[in-house]
Length: 135
Image (tube, rainbow, N blue to C red):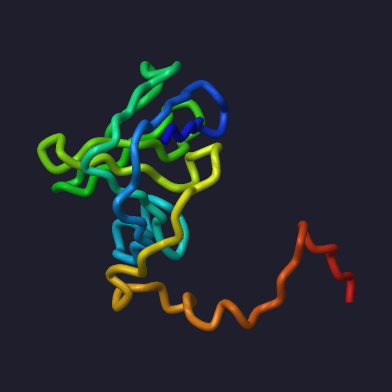
């Protein structure tokens, strides 16, 4: 299977050929910091191949003691990277333009989740940006 992705500004394009073995939502402090959200959503493969289609010169890798993040230097979007002595491909699920073919396997480092990351299924859902209330 071939999965295609890009960064937000479109300068970087890539494809991943192969299957993903795991899909985890990571709540560790570092993933929360580098995603700016409650968790990172990453796909993992030990067999898939990553190919940069365009803009590889815009890709930078940040490594903080083994916590690796690749990103576009123009727009800051998270991008795939290769870790664990080049044996593991990590793909941010949100970087894919094609449908993600698997559901998450689970939450990891859940004990480290943000204090506001609980009961979110019970809050109001909007299909677009909500109208401002002028009460």
